[in-house]
Amino acid sequence: MMAKTTQGAKPGPGELAERAKRRRMIRTVASLMVAGGVTGFTLALTETGPEGILNATITPTIAIALTLAYLVACGLGAFFMLRDMDEHELAFHYWSSAVAGSAYALAYPAWFLLWKGRLVREPDHLTLFILFIAVSFAAYLFKKSR
Amino acid sequence: MLRAERGWSQAELGGRLGVSRQAVNAIETGKYDPSLPLAFKLSRLFAMRIEEIFDDGEDDAGR
Image (cartoon, rainbow over all chains, first blue to last red; front, side):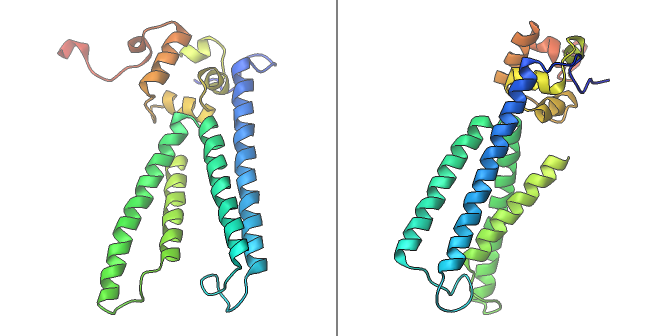
């Protein structure tokens, strides 16, 4: 019932605009992935001391540089992504953020209370951060696949 | 279908509206309700009233 392609060989102005927008979005996401990779690689290269991301240390200069790089990448990434993101995609992100926020609001108090009872180790921020990101990503993929 | 009548693909309509092909597909299949600004854009693009483009499922006879 629905035509999938424009009738005629040449893409129309709307199709060209849609393609350009998609290309810009792919470029933004790829740039963010490269920035994340460089940050992670730098962190891994400059870590000293005991093993493990929570135990190893980096110099204050590297710490400030990586923090600035992260904040700038997030700021620019958000700007460029929001510029090219439509309301449909934005709705996916709102929904997945709400699900991830709910997971955090459930997980932290539950973990905290169990820790108070000496049943589990103390809640740690890195695990909770990873939980938030993982749930957000899973919720986004779930919504997107439907 | 209004889009098909004009020979437009979903990507073509999406580009003219400033949304993705996926958004057009979701609107056409009833999986996503567009915002009022987007509905007005559609209305202007097709030169039709919003209620002529969208069906809210309410029966007028019952009002």
